[in-house]
Length: 67
Image 1: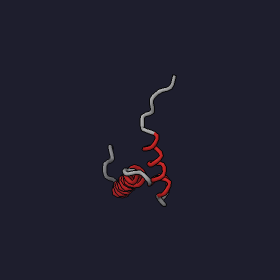
Image 2: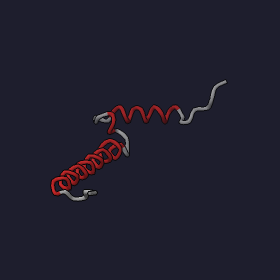
Image 3: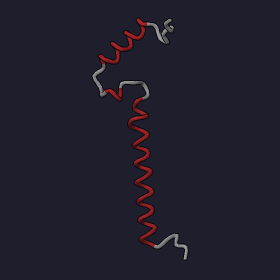
Image 4: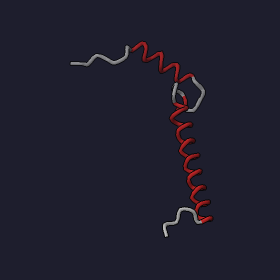
């Protein structure tokens, strides 16, 4: 007993040919791949850098000490 496929075979072949013909990196071939592989890591790096710099500034000036 075989299951019915999610996508028709012809459509799958067309999608494979399309993605194989694109001359970009594999992880940037999809429609929204630039968001997940470029924008999100860049936003995390920027926010992390900001927090580190703010912490260094606060330590240098003694801001936020408990005692």
